[in-house]
Structures are given as C-alpha cells and as structure tokens.
Length: 236
Image 1 (cartoon, rainbow, N blue to C red):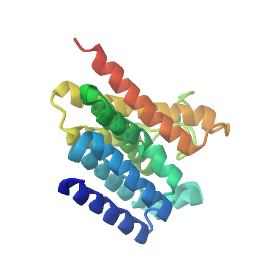
Image 2: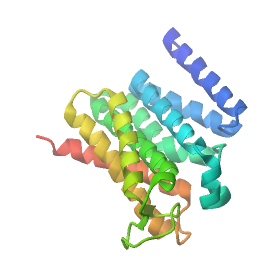
Image 3: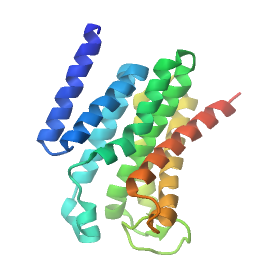
C-alpha cells in the first residue's frame, strides 16, 4: 500500500472511530463507513471522499438542527442521532459500488464518477429536504395528489424543502469538480430527480409498508445515478 493510501485509510478509521465515539454512527455502521469510503476512494480519489464528507457533515448538521421541534412534529421518528449500518448502506452503498466500478473499468471512469457524484447529490438533497423541509416548509402537499398532507409524513413535499434539497445537491455538484457546466447541471438535476423519486416511493410503497425507509433511500440514490448516466449519454 502506497503512503497516501495508508494515510487515507488511517484518516477514515480515525473519522469512523470519532463518529462512533460521539454516537453519530453505531460501531458496525462506522466499520461499514470505512469500507464505503475506501471503495469510493479507490475509484474517485480525493474528490469522491470530499463529496462523501460533505454529505456526512451536511446531513449530520441538518439532522441535529432544531431536533426538539422535529420531535414535536414526528415524535421519536424525527430524532435518530445515531445512524445504523442499514442507513449507511442506504445512503452510500450505490456510491461505493460505482467507486469499485470506476476502479475496475478505468476506461469508463468519468461516467462512473459522475454517477457516483449524482448518487451522493441525491442522498444530500433528500436528507436536507426531509430534515429542514418539515421545519421551514409552508405548504406541505402529497406528491401524488397535490393535496395538503401532514408535514414530515412519507411522500409529503414542500417548495421550500425542495429548494433546500436542490441547494444541497448543487453543493455536491460543485465539490465534484467535474470539467463542465453540463456535468454540474446533470449532477444537480439528477439529485433533484432522485429526491422526487424518494418522495414518490414514500407516498406509495413506503406508506403501505412494502418498502423500508432504508430501501427507499438506496433506490433514490440509484435512480439519481442512472438519471445522470442517461443524461450524460444524451449529450452530443
């Protein structure tokens, strides 16, 4: 193992240990985070790690923000300060797979790393939209019916929440440092589409108990990655 790679591994271990110590992640989730971080680094280097770090920091901050008000809205479901393994995989699993693919197939590295950024863009947008939208949204509607619905419920969106999520997606797109305005736009748009897909699945399958929240989150990051791949493939 080269020295930079060893430093990265040690940094990931230190960050995971700190996250477990401060109860941001369970010990098993922290170990899973190391594996996901290494997978992303193998395919996208420092850029991928920067995107992952931004997602974690923004998501952690949004989750902790005004937690007592969220408790009043959703009860204990609104306050999950310690993330478990399933939640880590749900948000970072697709990015890890794409990191491995970028490492294994270097000829397609640009495509896979763009899709990787889109998956984290969606994860970030969804987290910020959910955590902050329930606080700052004015009109909460069901994404399927367009009618007013309970804020914080599965499949319920607000304009403010969507805009906050879009900003989160754009932050990841900026951090990705891909080479063109088109790439930035694709990563941001894919993040928004993934976020909307999350709400659609929440309003349908999750409300009926057919999908868990973790599965829905995994799906939204996967959908965002596929959207980014399709969009970049449609460019002349």
